[in-house]
Length: 200
Image (cartoon, rainbow, N blue to C red; front, side):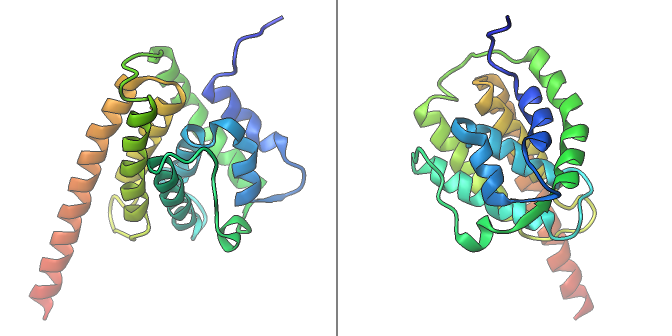
């Protein structure tokens, strides 16, 4: 009998089949993550920002990421979520598409990941991750052309995976990706601002 803990990719792949019905709420999804709600939640709710999704889904996920990041930064052990956001629904087919597209990529990371550099994933390190995720979630609420939400979404994915796998090296890579994502966002904002000035 296999007594090993399931890998992140296995949990993501099994998630759509753990619900009954065609739709589920954000609150249901958060409850299903249980004791992995922060690491796995950050990963799961950032994934829709790097894949084509129905309109409105990325913005909702960005709001959830802000809440997860803030409460992780504050050292909370459980998640509080406003009822209005908790009751927002997502189709099971959308969740299945997210899982099918993301699992192969997660498995590639898992082949390289292992618990290490726990200074980045311990209690203090996790709070720093939470603060960065909060900022990334805030950026994800802002619609940008061209690259859109992909850079901050990808950076949050890497941070979430590093946290749930307890791999400080992946978290460090996530910090680099976050800095690049914020730089791209700043550049896009500056170019849009300059373009508006040229028009008027």
